[in-house]
Image (cartoon, rainbow, N blue to C red; front, top):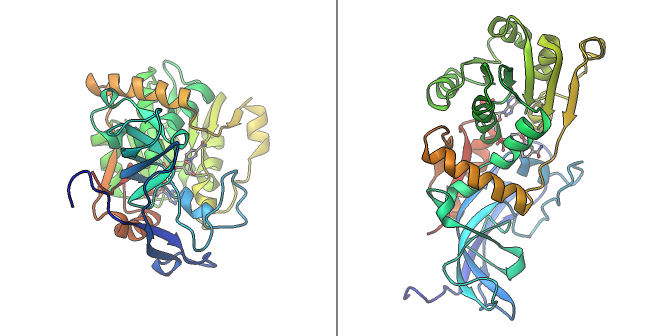
Length: 339
Ligand SMILES: NC(=O)c1ccc[n+]([C@@H]2O[C@H](COP(=O)([O-])OP(=O)(O)OC[C@H]3O[C@@H](n4cnc5c(N)ncnc54)[C@H](OP(=O)(O)O)[C@@H]3O)[C@@H](O)[C@H]2O)c1
């Protein structure tokens, strides 16, 4: 096949059925669909990288309360992806353009040009960097918690894609100490040695409130919570007067093994806490603003992009997702699809 010839089929991962208990490989189906030439106003995109997150677990639950479309049995899954335009029947995009879109879990995506968002390759070192969770980390740490100089900051679930960037953003805003929680000794080392957190603890090693109090004897001013459950409760207990909470995720509940947090109400009231949820919609403004800042910080070495690369293309996606749920990865989980 020559470079400008398209294959006739594209591999894709479909939902085989909704899981009723644990998710297994049987809930996914690898299939091929015909790859047509683009119609009027359409483009064909070769998917190069896709980001995986445990949010896909919520999308496999038809009763989820999250405001995002759930996956449908027999239909290809979707998720954040970057790729290269390889055919264009629209003046809006040219062959070779880098685009971000949501038709992941497949080799090629075909659709109307307005479903694909052009990205400026020159902003970041490599296309997969456009899949960072920086817009969420920034939204939570800067706009929601309003981190400022001298703050003592606690990030729960700090090793994942959102948390590892949120901690670094706090540091760049002058936080005096950045503390993270995570699930293993290796991940503590990763946070402190590679990502630059001041301290981290393993939530398996004893009561979270005790571990957090030992690292923050004067309390915490900002909490970026990805987990909920015991970690949220502990953070409320240890919080300083007037502390600001950015509520990002509820991993403990999302994974069905921690339940919803119980709010220690009197503590929250008497300490004058601000508890604020936020939902990042990834608007073009949020993405462009973040990518420009991210590029500058990467260039001057003040930030790192914590991520794990998984090889193997589309067929590797289901196992990579199960490994993510098994907590095997650190940082943003990026699967190389093509390119
Ligand atoms: N508010 C928003 O707009 C927004 C946007 C994007 C994502 N989110 C939320 O942000 C959170 C993080 O998302 P992400 O994509 O960066 O990462 P992710 O893929 O959801 O995180 C996976 C990691 O979370 C940790 N984890 C899993 N179960 C846990 C549990 N029961 N208790 C504590 N930690 C657990 C594990 O690390 P350890 O080994 O350290 O346990 C695992 O490696 C999620 O809750 C997601 O839904 C919110």
